[in-house]
Image (cartoon, rainbow, N blue to C red):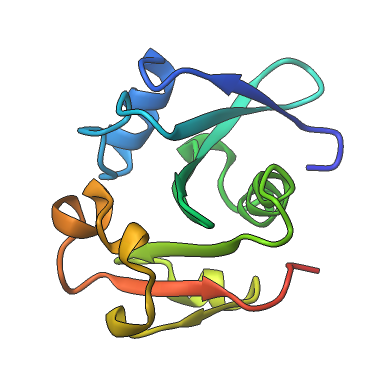
Length: 146
């Protein structure tokens, strides 16, 4: 994805909403304040995925990570995550919640954390306080992806 670029898109972007819905990811809070979303575009102008971040005080919630079905299996998920993390201040703690991709994110430097170890501002997000199931795995970035 080094040649692929991230373009900001609003939470109201129809392509973002469709991609998340097709993948079974939440769309209820996309237009709430404090969120930034990106479209991953290939060098030939094709949208290959989407990603988002949500500011939570000094921490960030990585969210809405999706590679479009026709582009999966090409290491774009790793690249999309790496590029998205470049939009976050180095000093920010980065968290995410997942129900299906814990192993994928472990390979990128995220570790499973207990809810008790997550900052209150992250736990208070709509994602973690109600949209994601309580059984979702919460992870924290402990080293940048290589």
